[in-house]
Length: 218
Figure 1 (cartoon, rainbow, N blue to C red):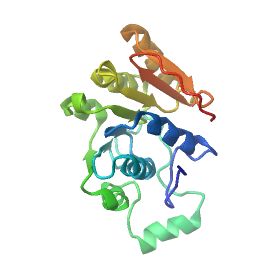
Figure 2 (tube, one colour):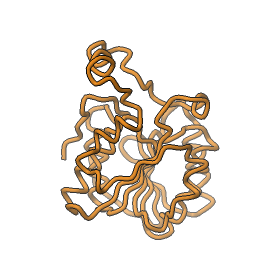
Figure 3 (spheres, rainbow, N blue to C red):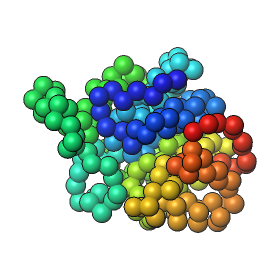
Figure 4 (tube, helix red, strand yellow):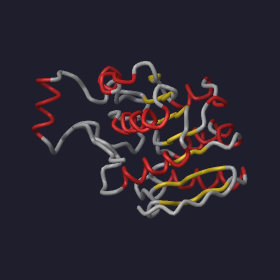
């Protein structure tokens, strides 16, 4: 399945990475998907399209993000939320759409095709994840805050998902600007004795209860 960008920014922009990501998800066919770090909603839309193709209306997508730049993410390593190098997109969102593509309202609009299947939550994962019933979730894409304590908190909150034979796929394992991601993942899987596979040339860390080998080409 082709990974589409929907005229927005996405962290999975490198050639082949988006398709690799969708192939990973399609192997597990999750029905309840949680994304931590929704950003412009591009990954969310691609995931919903894939899950609809697999399950039709019988799936649920949950997306969690701050949906704004504020003091809660000022110290985090996150992509630039604006189109600083693309004046055409700047003009389009500022004067035609008249919306911030990183806002909750803009992401809701992008996902409106699946309005009966989605649940977007505005908030900090450190505060919000503890309130989510993780026993209902079978797949998590973790791409929220990249600071060590944030990643470790998010992983600990996802413990039940992995224990129930679900999957947590972590982005930016090899990101040099955010060494706390790798440190938190390595410590978490060692302490919990979970299996961790580093895939897509070091980009993703796939955490599961038992070892699963996929012959995928990044």
